[in-house]
Image (cartoon, rainbow, N blue to C red):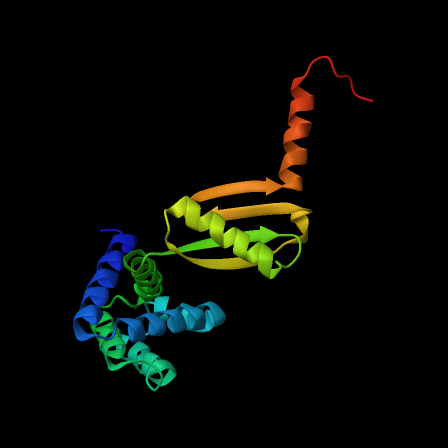
Length: 186
């Protein structure tokens, strides 16, 4: 079975258990914190994936880094994962947990890339665009500033992408000119 499917199953089990125990919000916060920490610490990520390091050492590291800040349910989950020798997929489990949480909570993540930071009015406009395209889901909008966009925007909602950037429009125009046999190079 692929690691992705295993991670998805572990995430679903943790989600259902945390709902049952009434600690869904706390475990969600724990998974966000865990993912953020792993993204910020390449060493920790490598330690969890390293097959040479013993599982009890990995659990000790997880306890020392997260033990005081995470719920008992999350720490018990970490213990189970290490007992099953599945530390390498912990990051994938956390990411999948957040995806499944967003799905059951009706939250749609979207990313908007622009050349300059968004004004509050533009931010509200993009949030409204996402709400309309997703059928009224709550919106979690991430903003990315990339000067290479030049102007316009690139909006990514799930696996859909709306590219209305000047850069892309200029590229499309160049391609049209290339296709037209009547236009000669100047």
